[in-house]
Image 1: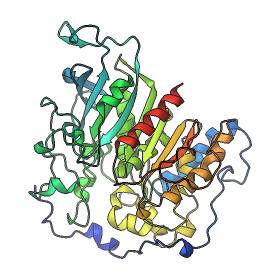
Image 2 (image 1 turned 90 degrees about the vertical axis):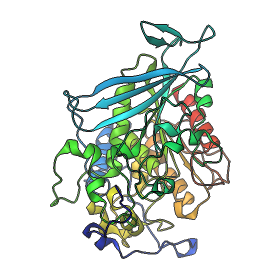
Image 3 (image 1 turned 120 degrees about the vertical axis):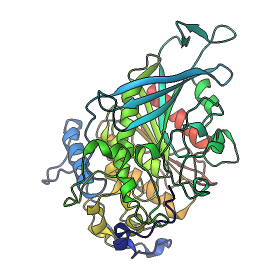
Image 4 (image 1 turned 60 degrees about the horizontal axis):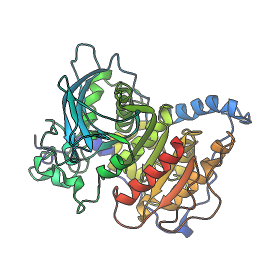
Length: 448
């Protein structure tokens, strides 16, 4: 399927007008953040017992105004173990699961790659009744994330399946105009030349399982500026579970909502794997998938720790700051990520009745570490200020919020508290070894 040559569609016509991003701190317009600890009817939020009601209000605002309605829970979750075997010289056990969302196993399906640490006692993993047996003394915590280039990009193992008809946005996927997953990318995220790293040995050494699924299998992510009218693909994948879209609504489910939904389904699967303690879960992701991880943690209270990395506008940074990415650029470049209602704030961020510190706060009192980097488009200072504004939600619960101090320098970890933190680095956009190290150390402290 050649999408790059498609003719422009009507879905992108109304998005051609953009507001230029601002990179001048002195040009930031005056703004006032909406109160976090005040109910919609004006009552103050006084104690931790009030928080569940306030959190529901916050999630309702984001569903109505930005991310669309949360997709419904599936009617079923059917799982099949497709393949398993040793990996990383036997220090890990690779498993590949396929999950469906109907009892008859029809319709959309997702492929999850799972690696659990194997504390082997002999020279090789034991096989009993055709199954590879792990020798872990107790169930281990798990890190879940969505990947960009396919599960096969995470491991060199030739057994890792490459699903068909999965469409992603990465430039190397466009060599033939197909946007498809490419076999030659097998193991690329084990290669330090790529800016997305998967340090499997770090997980295994820390006794942590890992689970990942390709985001393009959930909802195809084709750039609107290069693919004409992509909405017929954007609203496929798991969207087929939810019936025809009601185009009279401006709060339909979105791609970000679908990716967040899929992370929760991954946690459903984790709860069924005996070697995994799903109560000790870390959900993470970078860029658009960092947004999805943050939204998933805001909506799903089973997620214990969330580490969104370099989310950019529409994720952690304050929108009212009007610095870097803004609502107009978001809606022009990525209209499938947000619901139509969000468009009315393009060039009008001051009118937003909420801001992103509310979304961060919806994770409280669970653990949240926001990771940034050096690009002004991603507004790292806006991320930090958002964390600062969200901090009262943790303090309401008697938990230390963001540690005091100004916007930290690169690699300064002094703004990482026990349950809420902010850290940033230099270098290129992507998930690097230091991002993973910060995330895993933060999660381990939170797990206790």
